[in-house]
Each structure stands twice: as C-alpha cells, then as structure tokens.
Length: 346
Image: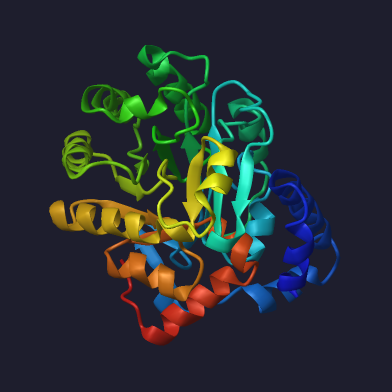
C-alpha cells in the first residue's frame, strides 16, 4: 500500500509531500476506530524491547529523530506509528523561516535525502504552548535546541539557555544541536573551547539534572571525537546523539552531476549507515561505555538498526528511513529485535 502511495508522493516536492502526508495522517486519526487500527498495523510491544536509559523508561528503543516534527505538531500521529520517543525541533528562541526553497531533495536511488532547511521553526513560545497540551501516554519527548541564524556564535549560549529554560518542565530530555551544516558557522561551536563553555552554562542551569545530549556530526576526526568524549565527561552530560547529517557525498548511486546540481546541504539516509555506526562504536569503546549514545543515521530496517545496537547504541532514531520504508518501519525493526533477542538495555 505504501509503495503505491510513495510513487505518488515522490512526484511532489519533498517538503510539500511531507506536509500533505502529515495533514492526511492526522485527519485519519480523528476518525473513530482508526487509532485502534493503527495500533494493530504499526505497533509492536514486548517486554524485552523496553529500555530504561538515563532514568527514562522507553517502551522500545526506536525514536523519531529531530527535524521531522520541528514544531511539536505530530506527537500523536508519530506515537501511533510505534515510536517510543520523539525529538522535536530544532527549535530556536525566535521563529525563523529557514533557508530559501527548494531546500529538501530526494536521492531516490541512494535512499537518501539532502536538506538545507536552516532551522525553520515557529519559535520556542509556540512550541511550549503545544507541549503544554495533552500528549500520548508513555511517549518520551525530547527538545532539540539551537541558535537563531542572526545570533553570533559568541552569544549563542544565550539562545540555547532561552530554549532550555522555557522548555525545561515540558520535555523529558534536551539535545544540543551544534552540528547542523545549514546554519553558517554553527559547527564551529563543536570546537572544544566554545562547546565546553556552552555545555557548562546549560548544566549550571539544570537543577533537576534533566538528561542532556549533544548531537554531533559524522564528519569529525578521531582527535575531535576524543575531545568530545573529554567534554562529555568533564561537563557531566548524559551522552551523545551520533550522528547528524554529513557534508560528504560518499556512497551515492546518483551521478556526480545530478548531486552537484542540488548544491549545499546535509546528507541523510542509507549512505550514512557505516559513518554513523563507526562513530557510535568509537564513542562507546573509547569512553569505556561511560555515557549514553543514541545512534542515528541510515536506519531503514531491522538490519541497519541492529548495526547501531551491536555497535553499542543504547537507543536509536530514524527519519529518512521512514520516508523510504514507510509507516511499517518501527514495527519491522521491533519484530526483528524481539525475534533475534538483541540485548536489553537497563
């Protein structure tokens, strides 16, 4: 069924197709009996799949990565598809339009996406008003926070603190995004000095010791990863989300000419699997499993999910894989994990 729908959707601009799909999904879920139908079709529960990570209880290890639901509009819809946790954002203090369109592109043969969205979002106050409403029972919600494009890096900490403090009692965890390639200069905040300063400021304003993660790029050198490990331990952060999109164009089936014609942006999807898994494995082994690692990148089925978990990921998140695999993604992964008896994190 999704294969036929995908043929139609892939004829439409990707960003527009996203909004159309979610509009119809939310409309369907308002029809009596559809939620129960979705539960039977797309959800899978088993005690062996439950996880307790950083004091949070997850019904399964599969979450929705940031970027899909930037503004907290789709919590009920995505929970209906079986995700145990949803990371909203990236959110900034003030609403911003993001980069000019078109800014989202499919690489269908490679099962990948290129985006240069640029932190388009409704702003932290609008998100907060939505999160104050009822949310799905048992769903873990995280907030991925960033800085506004016009905010210089030397003032970035103020933007992160505004989002952190406003959403503090509305979400279960935070993710600090300094790794998107689509905000000029943002990745410079991954350097040891500014990153330590930023994370220290956030931790000093974290009275309840709420879980805080750092989302990093897959393009870091081993020396930079070693610095990240030191910073996570030094600042007492909960862990790392590995990884964001890549600025490389390796492993693509499309011609160089067609890829180059798209222009700048972060690459996500199937081609990231080896890069992201290698970062997960390195962080876990080099830190002696000293902190939580959430694996993201190239997860589109049970096999790719298992690669992240086998590398040591405590949880996993998907985004591009949902676009290509469809609404059965989570259930397919969970059934595979339950059957194979992949280790249970506690």
